[in-house]
Length: 382
Image 1 (cartoon, helix red, strand yellow):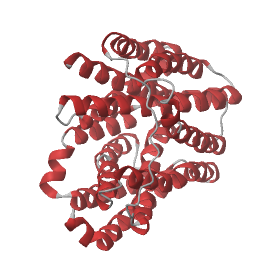
Image 2: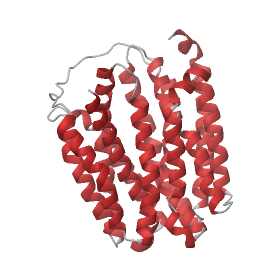
Image 3: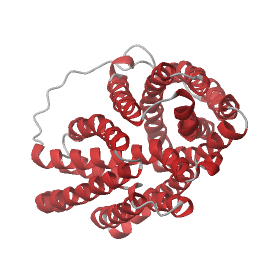
């Protein structure tokens, strides 16, 4: 069982290597291809739409193939798409490779998490947060490698480095993951009531939070490269700090939630994120901006799991349905807001992207407090 556990860890690390390497190289790729901020915003929205679509299709795909089979195909496919993305020199190539990579990441995300949930059940101890922490820490390290190799060496060299954990993850899946039977859907009409009004509030808060996370991942390198072009080789440092702090927080997330409660954890976290994003909007300089991304990483790390845990507790007899509804509501801002952030960057500067994120994080904080106020008696009863 421990070998299966290790194989899942390597898969999450491989996932992080893809995301980190690509986003670390984005400033170089944007400059080389001539991609405008407006076009990048459109790519972000379409990529998020494809990502969500692939995740939503996971249940249907699982009727015909097991997570193991899908992972064995998607991991090498992701490497090839990443290599193509890092070698592209045109706007069209950037756009197409960005969307294909979004599809690979979404598919990999849903199936590695599906297998991880089964492994956690079989181990009979909580390990899910550890898996996600490994992914974030991998993103942190490979973001810096991605920016360094794209400027000092060649972008394709970054793909080769990312290919090492990808191959190890693929080998672990091939050798240690069991071949589970495809899922046979069970049609069941649930009569359990769901508090859709409160879940809508939670879904919007989750959507704003994820939008802020994605903005930090996709725009951090471009901000730092714009502030100090001479330090473009380490423009991945912002994402490195973000991922390092976010991953570390997730390692201790369950302890913090148990000790202080979800509301306090989210309130303090979102307040810190608001301060970090506001600081980034003021353009304090390269090193202060890089450190501000560390504050954002700490602030946003536990909000999403807290919100989805809350959604499940609000509908104890229909947890899956409640979480699906919450994810659906959260998908609207996740798809539309990246495009709007691109417009802001094109018409003003990259700094305005993070000023807008400060407003989004503040809105998420208000929605979290409102959700807890409306759902207080329900939460106390569960």
